[in-house]
Length: 345
Image (cartoon, rainbow, N blue to C red):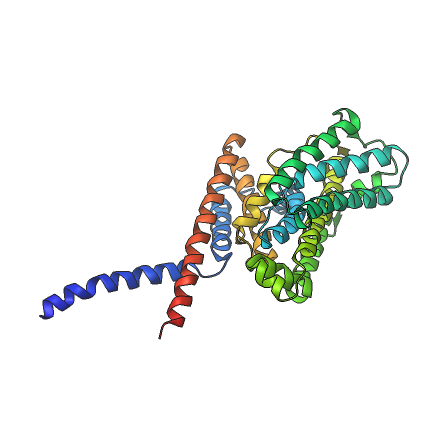
C-alpha cells in the first residue's frame, strides 16, 4: 500500500515542481533582461577592453538616444493594448518640417517646436481614427506608416536636407552632440524625459487610466474613463515623442533625411517588449523600457566590437525579442497559477 501511495503521489510532486519553476520565471517584468544586461556587460568587459571605456558608452548612449525617446511613446501605446507602426515615418516627416523651416530662415528653436507640433498632429490623426472612427490600430498605423513616409519623400523629392552650413541650426547641433561635464547632453535630455514619463504613468490619473484601458477597456468605460479620448491622447503622446525624436535625430546628423532607418520602428517595439511591457496591454513600465533599450544597444555595440557582421544584428535582436515575449507568456501563466491557488479554499 505504501508503495502504491508513493507512486500516486509522484505526479503531484512533479506538478508542484513545474509550478515552482513557473513562479520563478514570473518574478518581475524586467528582472530577466536586467540580469541579461549585466551578464552581457561583464562578458564584453572581459573580452573587449574598449567596451567599458567612457567614450564607448558615450557612443552607445548617443546611438540609442532616438530609440529611447521614441520608446517612451510606444510604451504608453502598448500599455493600452495597441501599437504605433508609423512612429518612425512620423519622425521622418517631422524631421523634414524642421529641415525645411531652417532652410527658410527660421531659428532652430522655433523650427524644433514646429517639428514637435507636426509629430503630435500626426499622432493625433492616428488617435482620432483609432479612438473615434474605431478603425483597428494595426490597419490605421500600417496605413499611416506609408502615408507619412510618402509625405516625407514628397517634401524634397526624396533629397536629404543638409543643415551643416546654416548658422541658425548650429546651436541645436551643439546642444544635441555636446556634453555637460562628462555627460552627453542627450543622456540628460533622455533622462529628463523618462523622469517625466515615469511620474506621468505612476502618479497621475492619466497614467492610471492608461493601465485601466489596457487591462480591460470595457471595465474602464464602466468606471467612468472615456476610452476613446484616452486612445486619442496616447497616440498623440506617441506622436509628440516622434517629434522629439526627429529633433534629436536631425541634430545628431546635422541633416534631415526623408529615408529613415527601416529597422528603427522594429527596434523601438523590440525594446519595449524586451523591457517587459505586455503586448496585450495593462502591464509594464518605462523603467523596463530603458533597460530594454540599453540591452539592445549593448548587444549591437558588442557585435560591432567583436567584428561580427552587422547583418547578424537583426537575427540577434529578433531572437531576443521572441525569447522575451515567450518568457512573458510563461510569466503571465505563472501569475494566473498564483491567483488560482490564492482563490482555492
